[in-house]
Length: 307
Ligand SMILES: [Mg+2]
Image 1 (cartoon, protein in one colour):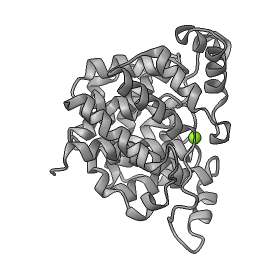
Image 2: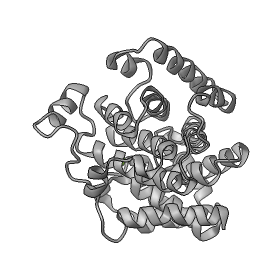
Image 3: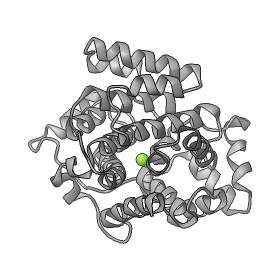
C-alpha cells in the first residue's frame, strides 16, 4: 500500500476528530443503546459532527509541538488552558490538573496530586496523543519520552503514560505502514505487564473472531487507559478500512468518543486522509478550530518533520 506521508499525518488528526465526533452522541451508552441510536433510519451517519475534549486537547498538543518544534511542557499546558471549553466534556482529572496549573502550579507537579497522590490512569492522555505519534513515528525512544511527558501534564500515573505511549506507537507503526507486524512491534515496545497481557489478548481475540461481548469483557470499553487503548488497537487490526474500524470501535459502547478517536487516529495514519468517508468529514464541525484548522495542523507537523 502506498499512501503519501502527508496524508497520513493529516489522516491521523482528522481521523481522530471524526472518531471522536461519531462517538460523542452515544458516550456512556451500552452496546445495545448505541446500536439503537445509529440504526435509527440513517445508519452510521454523523449526527452532530461536534468534537469533544479529546480533539480539543489533541489540537493543543499539535499547536505546542509545532510552535516549539518539539516538546515544551509549560507551553503545552498553556495551550490546553487557552483552548479549554467546558462544554467539550472534560474528565475530572484533566479539569483539576489544568485548574492547578492555571493557578500557578508547575506542569510537573500539578497532576501528581490527583487521585490521592497516585495520579490519573484514565485515557485522557492517550486520546490526544496523535500529534506525538506522527511527529516521532520514526523514533520509538523519542516517541516514548514525549508521550510520557505530554501525558504527565494531566495523567501522571505510570499506566496512564504507558497507555498514551502505546497509542502513540500504534499510530507510528500505522504511519510506517506496519499493520501485519503491529502486534509484534507493540509487544517489543510496551514495558508494563498490564499492557503486555492486553496485547496477548488482542492476538488471541483476532485469531478466533471474537464477538463484541467478549471484546468488551477482555479488552474493555471504559475510561481507564488499559481498558480502552487496546480496544482501539484491536478495532484497527480487525478491519481493512477506516469506516468499519471506527464504526466497530464506537459500536462497543462505553467511552465511545475516546475509543472512536483512538481507533480513528491509528486508522487515519495507516490509510491516509483520503480513506476517511467524505460524508463524515463534511459533517465534522468547522469554525475557528474546526476541520480545516485540524488538517492544517497535520500539514504543519509534516513541515516541522520534513521542512
Ligand atoms: Mg471526550
